[in-house]
Length: 227
Image (cartoon, rainbow, N blue to C red):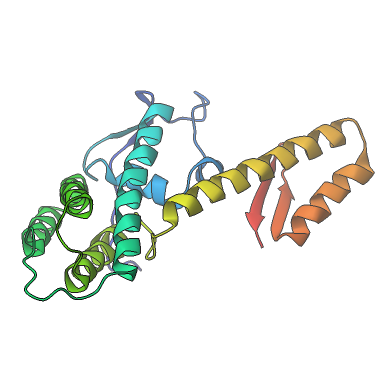
């Protein structure tokens, strides 16, 4: 029994409806090998849930770039906050409540996530101007900004991690790790084709020791997951 049932509109690929007969079905597990969960979530929220969403490499790469810009701003904000102090007589360069009201209005407008994310980018622009300007860095103001991003981008939309000071580096590091895992899978598959079982098993055991579990599927492909 479901108290609430939520469903978004059709997801297409390069303008065509996904279908096994067309061979254009995208597996979420495979997608997460290439992009972070935050990137996929950002991409899904870039279109209103009532609207059709078209998947393409260009579209999700654009989402990844947009998320990277937001992460960069939040990261700089949190790093600056870590070394900031209270400033007597500080006057805020802009009102956070204005952005809060706009964000809430967007979400109250039939969960208009694209509009809500636009508010976050408007705030991101204002934050970047503040951090690169001559205004003093006030701890209270910076903490309020950080709290806003935590409650909205992390808590409501789930598109950034709670601690994003090094998230840009973390995301890059995760992508490199996933690429290395995929490289090991390709190597193991090639070893298996050549029936070099000993080395193939060694690759599997080395990955297992690092917390990566391989799954050989009936269709001949191999998936992986974290233990």
